[in-house]
Amino acid sequence: MAESANPSNNEPVALPLRHVAAVVAGNALEFYDFMTYSFFALQIGRTFFPSHNPLSSLLASLATFGAGFLTRPLGAYVIGRIADRTGRRPAMLLTFWLMGIAIAGIALTPSYSAIGSAAPILVISWRLMQGFALGGEVGPTASFLIEAAPQDRRGIYGSLLVGTSGIAVFAAGLVGYGLSSFLEADSLDNWGWRIAFLIGAAVVPLGLAIRRSLPETLHAVDAASITEPGRRGGYTTAALLGLVILASGTMLTYARAYMTTYAVGILGMSSRAAFICTIINGFCTLVFYLIGGWISDRYGRRPVMIIFTLLLAAIALPTFMAINNSRTPEALYASVALLTAVTGLGQGCVMTAIAESLPQHVRAGALGTIYAVAIAIFGGSAQFVVVWLIGATGNPLVPGWYLLGAALFGLAAMVKTRETAPVVIATARLLPVAPL
Image 1: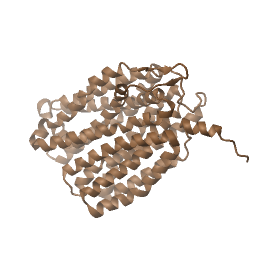
Image 2: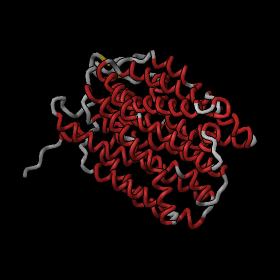
Image 3: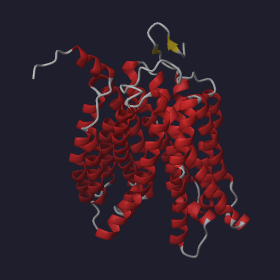
Image 4: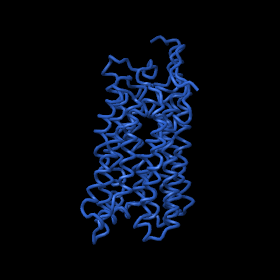
């Protein structure tokens, strides 16, 4: 199958499936790592941050996880510049190397009891490296997908970046469920949690091998941007609006990830029920983000984002009311499926819309940076804010209010965005201009 731009019409042809999988694997690995660390935060805390106070150990573990968010903007800027100057492929190879080293490093670092204070120092170092790599992953990857996609499929190609993270969440839920079901608590504490990280590290060599064979899209004729390269003000506004939309999306994503803890801590359900909740979240993410991207290729990015974000705002609070009134696993599962589906339909085309609004020569760096800033500030704080608000107010409906606020926050920026879908732009150019 051809892998470069078609010289007759400057239109790229579809990439082989193995290439698409290698491109999106980095973002999937990010979500797998996030969910795995969340599941085993207690075990990681006991291994590397032992304390007579279990809460102190857990907080130290969570703080180490949060440290990875600090280096994301730096990675987005540094690796994004490499992608915009040297190429998308070398940048994607660099980020995958760094991610593989970091996730394997966490899994293989000896415990505090074995090497003392060197253990937490090493784990923090791995998290900082991982954050740097993940910050630099999104911009080059999203740029490559948009630039390699046929014009009428850019929405669904872009949706793969987040949609396939559902596979990772689904896999993380299955791994967590399996380990917690088949291992005794002592085994899970001592070494079982490391298996989950090693499973993630195992995909790295294959991903690297395939990424080396990817075509380069940086110097291809750019048909993906609606912004003229010389109009700095145009793409600066687009970047600021994109920052708000991505901030909203990451708040929605990480707040939904809290549902596992919410099911156990607030609703009093079992850990197994919570893991099933995560599996449903992952499956629905995969399906509905891709559907959202596909719909946007036909009806436009802007109306799809606005309509489904409005719908999410309308159902967020009633959904949590229903969960708390019934407090059954069935209600929880149905609610998670509904919230994830509506979110995915509205957010599936976001990365495509932002990438299309940025010129090629700054696309990877700008997109990566605004994503990294959004996730570092809003994603990294989402669960902490929700937990703090529940504790401060005693109101179990706080997650519903939080989702409502996040949806309205993004909606304010969506209504001000320009349409970027080629099919809508082409149709608009054919319509006669009505007299004033």
